[in-house]
Image (tube, rainbow, N blue to C red; front, side, top):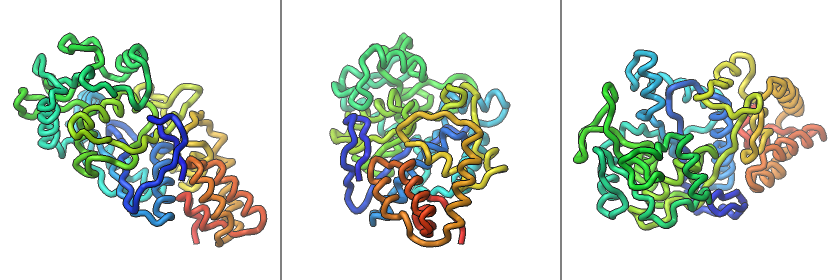
Length: 372
C-alpha cells in the first residue's frame, strides 16, 4: 500500500506490521456532524477496511474533545452544562457514523476521562525542561524542540498566521515566544476546573490528544490523521510535546484529509456554512451519501452541491442491478493501495457492473452496502 505522508511530503509505502495502530482526531461535540466530518471519517474507514482485507488487525482510537473553548462557549450560549451538550452531540455523531456504515472504532476516549493522565504528562514535559510555568499557566517551550515544524514544513511567519486564526493566542503576554503553546491554563469564571500543582484550571487542546494517544496506543503510532486544518497547530504541537517526553517518534505516518467547501468556502462550524449528515439521511440512503463523498479523493479539496446526490443514486441503482459477485474487486483493491484512490475504485465498480459482473463484494470493500 502506498499513502501520502504529510511530513515526508510524498506518497510512500505504508507497510505496518500485523497490528496497525491508528489515531484519528475526533470531534469537539458542540454541533451536529457535517459533511466535512463525514469525508474525513469515511476516508479512515475505507483505509481500515482495506487493512482488514489485507489481514491486519487494526486498532483505531478516535477521541472526543469534551472540554475546549468552542464547546464551553456554545454551552454557555445555550445555558446548558457543557458535559450535557457534549454527551448529546457525541451521541448524534455516533449515530451518524453508524448510519453511514462506518466500522466501529476500538475506543473513543473523552478528554475529561484523562485529567489525571494529562496532569502527569504535563509534569513529565516540565521535568524534561521543555515547558515552563508563567501566569498560572504551563507552556511548551518551542525553542527547546528543534524539530518543531517537522510535519507542516511551514516557516515562522506562516505558523504565526495560523496560530492566530486557530486559537493559538500568540499575543499572550505570559509566553516567552508567540509560538509557545499552552499545556495547562487557568479556567475563567463559570468554566470547569481541576486542581493541579500549578493551580486550578483545565488542559490545553493539544495535550489532550497526546495523552490519549500515548495512553491508548503506546509510544509510537503507525498512522495519525485528521483534517488538513489540524496539521498546524494541533498535530505539530502534539508531535513536539510527545517526542520531547518519550524521545521516540510519535507517528510513523501522517495522513490528512482535504477540506469540503460550500459555495467556494471551507465548510466549518465557526462559519455556519454546514450541510449536516443527519439532514441528508432524511432524504437519501447511506450508500448514496457514501458514494458521493468517496467520488472525491481524500487529498483534494472539493465543493459540495446538491446535484451530486442524484448522480450517485443512479450509480447505486446500476450496481444493485448487477447483482452479487466479486467483479471489480481486484481493481478496487489496487486503487485503494494507490494512495486510497476512491474515485478510481468507484469507476472500477462502474466498469464491472457495466460488463455484467456482480459488484456486491467490491462495493462492500468501500463500505457501500448494496443489500442482499
